Structure formats: structure tokens, C-alpha cells
Length: 260
Ligand SMILES: Nc1ncnc2c1ncn2[C@@H]1O[C@H](COP(=O)(O)OP(=O)(O)OP(=O)(O)O)[C@@H](O)[C@H]1O
Ligand SMILES: [Mg+2]
Image 1 (tube, rainbow, N blue to C red):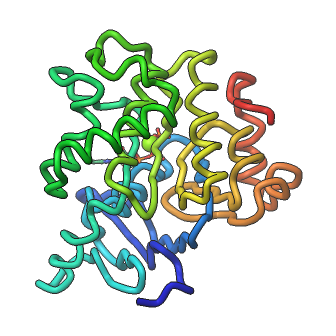
Image 2: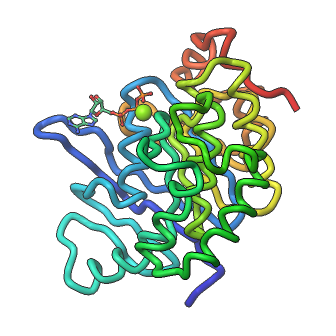
């Protein structure tokens, strides 16, 4: 399979809900080890784009391509549906609201999909989960239930849970937006570490510090379109469009995020 091309790509994706056109021909290739950060005003279509890439939403036009194979389009044929089923476990998704299963311990949350979807042996799944818990700094929370964890801890479990499927790409939708400032940092540190390890990531975020310092590419969306795409530091230093300039001016002081 072609490895030189993008790992995953949106190609001319449009999406309408009823008569409302939410995405208008969005093309976004994500190459191996890219950390693509997507910013833009509320309602600009960021979550919808992410959900199309994660196969949670069917595009109205265009296609999603993973490693050269079409995995989603408006009218998927049988081969495409088969391809989608095959690659779905390789697309990790982390949501704003962690969506952990409340009736399961941290460990059970992490091993559930490897056991059920991959058919992994329990001992192997547990060993992998323990490694991931150490990675996100939560080995001591292994046997507790999600309600006993802080929001930042829950989000780190959600990241470990997504990683347990050995994804080829991780999609994050505002992973820190529901967290208090002091808890955001611990999640951003885990994400920065993932990026440093070479994980391919697409991150919808209001964390401008993360986008500037960890992102390899910056995408600014407005009204369902990509308005600017480029090098993050260049974008923040000198946005090219009036819409992007206005967006940056309107940001709260609280959205600075990590500085390093
Ligand atoms: N399931 C749906 N049904 C109808 N309209 C929807 C649906 N999902 C999203 N929309 C609409 O699509 C537009 C884009 O929504 P989306 O959630 O993608 O924006 P966003 O950029 O993620 O915004 P935010 O920054 O607030 O999260 C909005 O106008 C929203 O109301
Ligand atoms: Mg959103």
C-alpha cells in the first residue's frame, strides 16, 4: 500500500444537515507524523469535519481516503463499506466530554475494545493497558471508576483507551475545553508527548499555545471552508485573511494554553 501519500485525507468533503451546508468542499490531507491543528469560530464545521474523518458522519459529497483507499463517500459501494469496517479501529477519537463508560473501571474501559473488537487475549490486553496507564501517568488509578477521577484524569484515560487500539491516526475534538485551566495542562503534556513520539494527529483546539508550539500545520476554518492553511507560527504571527485576523483578536486571554 502506498506509504508516501497521506495517512488519512478529506477530499472535497461537503456536508449538509437538511438545507444547511456545514462543510463546503474541504480538502485536508494528513501525512504521517503530522500534528494538524484546526481552529476557527464556533459553528465553522470543525467537529463535523472530524466526525466525517472518524466515519461517524457520512459526507454529502467528496470522500475520505485512508492510505489510498476510499473509506467514506455519499454513496459508498460494498467495497468501500468493507474498507471502512476494516480501518475504523485504526482511527482513534478523543472527544471534549471524555465519554468513559461509568460502570467500568479505568482498566476495563481501556481493555474493552481490544477484547471485543480485536479479539485480543485478556492478559495481553491488560499488559498493554498497564503500559498505556503508565504513559499517561495513571497507573495508580487502574482499578477505580471514572466518577472518582478529575476531568483531566478522565481525559487521559480516554486517550489511553483510544491508544489501546493502536490507531494509525488520533483525532481530538477540543480535548481540553471541558477542563479547568490547571487540568488542561496535564492533558496537553500527554498530547505533546504523543506528538513527539510521532503519532499522526488532527486536533481541533482552542489551545493556541499547543497549536503554535506542537502543531506542524495550522488550519483555519470559517463557514465550512478552509480559509488558511500553513505553518502555525507564521499563521499566528501574520494571519493572511481578515477573517483569521478577526478570529485571533477575539480570543479570550484564557486560551493561551501551554507555552513550551
Ligand atoms: N447533527 C446535526 N444536525 C443539524 N445541524 C448540525 C448537526 N451537527 C452540526 N450541525 C450544525 O453544523 C454547524 C457546524 O457545527 P460544528 O459542530 O461542526 O461546528 P464547530 O466548528 O465544531 O463549532 P464549535 O467550535 O462550537 O464546536 C453548526 O451550525 C451546527 O449547528
Ligand atoms: Mg465543535
